[in-house]
Length: 296
Ligand SMILES: NC(=O)c1ccc[n+]([C@@H]2O[C@H](COP(=O)([O-])OP(=O)(O)OC[C@H]3O[C@@H](n4cnc5c(N)ncnc54)[C@H](OP(=O)(O)O)[C@@H]3O)[C@@H](O)[C@H]2O)c1
Image (cartoon, helix red, strand yellow):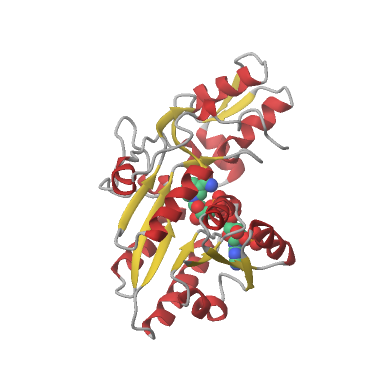
């Protein structure tokens, strides 16, 4: 199978490319720099130079592949606008073709908002942070398109070896021998998934175009951040000493997106387990190497 990936050099995308190559699929990745060309090539993918905001450059190549995976994001104020340009450009190009294409789009656990003691399944109503509301609308547009068979993956909080992913801040503090700073409350729960486990979900879905709709990608439904901080402190031989910062102070310093990691969330991954027969290799984050192998 030939797969075109947007965001193949990112935190999640690199793991997807590695998994595609491992499965002997041919991966083509959008690249916007020499550095990204090299990153894709070293993973075994072929780079295509272009920018997410200029779909006219890459949409025809993307549509010539068997499946397209969208896991790119600018993480700037223009994030929603660039995604709209990319996805509507892709749709316009798809209208000129008769056959449907497989498309895997990316949402995320933050789209469900705070779940508290509830557990968000794919039937849970979306309640996104305002800065991510566009993602729900774009996912809906793609699901309704007759030109694509679309699956929308909602990754939980993603951790990995390398910089640690969502554990990065905690790991950096522990490595420096400093108390871990918790944003909001130590009781806040994060749904979790390790990124190679997540990559298998993307690849499984790319291979199964009959499966359409929303798919949560989660290995652990909800783990309290205070518990994660304790586990990391234990790994570094540190006392269970944390500093807790108030929500409003965190948002004042980092901006509105920082509300995301302060959402108390639980998310179910049962649908993916049933539909794909998927199961996580890392069912417990403490069994991974991540909390010991951070690179600063
Ligand atoms: N990480 C998580 O825990 C998590 C959880 C849930 C959902 N998500 C969602 O998953 C998606 C990817 O997240 P991530 O953590 O993998 O992000 P990331 O590491 O920042 O990767 C972003 C990717 O987008 C590419 N990109 C950015 N702007 C571009 C542009 N103008 N043209 C072409 N490519 C561009 C980057 O390319 P360069 O390498 O050239 O910069 C990179 O490949 C996001 O939508 C995010 O909201 C992430």
